[in-house]
Length: 180
Image (cartoon, rainbow, N blue to C red; front, side, top):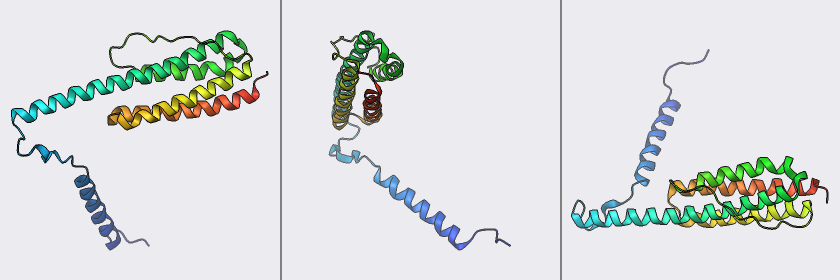
């Protein structure tokens, strides 16, 4: 028969969990005490507002760059689909994913997505391989932008970079199956 109630092991586990929560909460403090005693003063408020506006400009700039990379990639997909219609079955869902990434990365209030079509490689297999390489470059670009991105944008960029890597893999496999 199993013992019911609070056991010593259960009590120690709960105490350890509470202590770990307290330690982690303490590690998450921002250290906002750096104002040199100016906390609450007009000078500190002005500096904070300036920092916020600079962060917003930086985030908008990062988003525009990321959207540019993704829009270029979307243009390459559109071009390959227009030039090699036989690839449509495999490329259409991937293109739709790239379009969704571009919309997610776009700054709020941004205009519609514009992209430039480029000339794809000669054969369908080479065109799909070129798309795989473009996806790898996009993943690298989004990953590099993580260093300067605020936390929320960094999470989005990391997700899009991971998706671009996965799409690159899928395109590489699709290129192997595509007739020359």
